[in-house]
Image 1 (tube, helix red, strand yellow):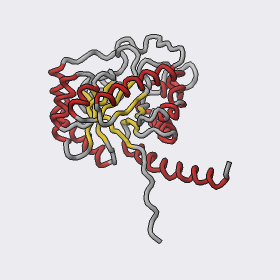
Image 2 (cartoon, rainbow, N blue to C red; image 1 turned 180 degrees about the horizontal axis):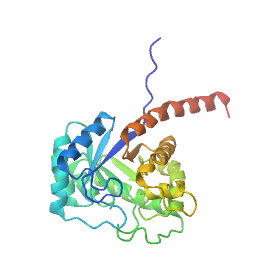
Image 3 (tube, helix red, strand yellow; image 1 turned 60 degrees about the vertical axis):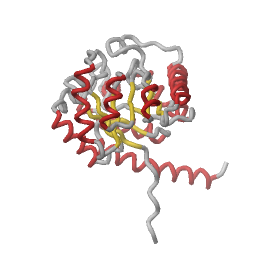
Length: 278
């Protein structure tokens, strides 16, 4: 009997921080050669997209000058072009333009403002919801209805991008970008509502602080970054099972393995529901 065709799986975006101050890897890939080597390793592990960033967006991060950000990301994108789909994690128009010239085909935009560049260059665009700036976003963020407000914002930006002619638009609820632990959990539970907007959904929870808060004993400091893999996988799997089309992660190989199970499990559940009837 021939093997059954593989179920389609959600996409996995590997994070490549070419920065000295990222919250997770803290400069581990700041050296250009090591960054390229790590990018190729993620490709070998099954990454569908490698997301190259030259400016940290962690809470409290300092901004980077355009020339320095270009120096960090463009050579890495050029070296990886042709090996895998590449995105650039930036908020600067000049960096986005140069990254596309170097081979990037997706703009991962935490400012949700670069859709004119994406439309002009004919590349994909991710709109992320962020409340405030890295310097302020985790200072007592407040919402009346976090799911409603985030959804309204993202749909508004996505519609503007679509009208402008952007060929591929993703929405990202911005887990950890101006949200409390409670806000993050509400948004993760609301992935089906985001999927219901009709736009593909990208979710990034990998190694974030709220995971360390949730897994640490009550009253303790958050579990350290390098102990957050199980929680990262759990939240990524939850998002994928609820319909997220892509997850952004530091740990590519285990996430690809988890993603590979989502399609068959969802198919089996749907078939069981159909057989059971209303």
